[in-house]
Image 1 (spheres, rainbow, N blue to C red):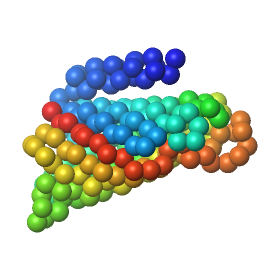
Image 2 (cartoon, rainbow, N blue to C red):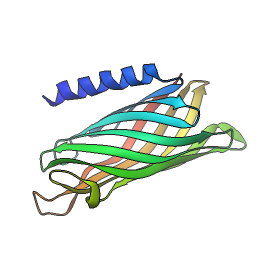
Image 3 (spheres, rainbow, N blue to C red):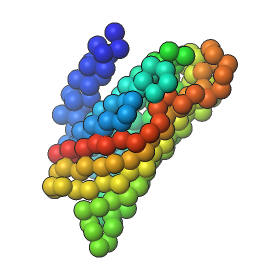
Length: 185
């Protein structure tokens, strides 16, 4: 069932990216997880996107998200801030919530093909549903632009959530290194 949901989410994200003016597709793999994301520019400086992480880090977890971000991209930096809905489907609990967060990358002046940065999103308990009490995703990445529209990267990610149903506090759903590629069009 999860593989069907993952395939449907991927198809929906590809359709969403196709409707947008400029977009990106991102795929990364880690020791216990795979993540796919798609985003598109709805209008200048506003990006709509979504993604899915499927992890078997400790428990089986599939985490979907959809986000609306205000963005800016220059030769020196790339930043985005906005709202994100995250939906968790795990062995220990289910639920979703609205959170805030963003990302930021700086391009190295002497190596403009290289950018360093990270991202973070937090969903507080005040705006969650079902079993979810709160959740977060944080990460850092080093990217290298192989071609004008292709970035490869390595990074670290941690994804966690606290579910009311199990009473054990925040559980780490994914943690570790990742390698990925991002296509921009």
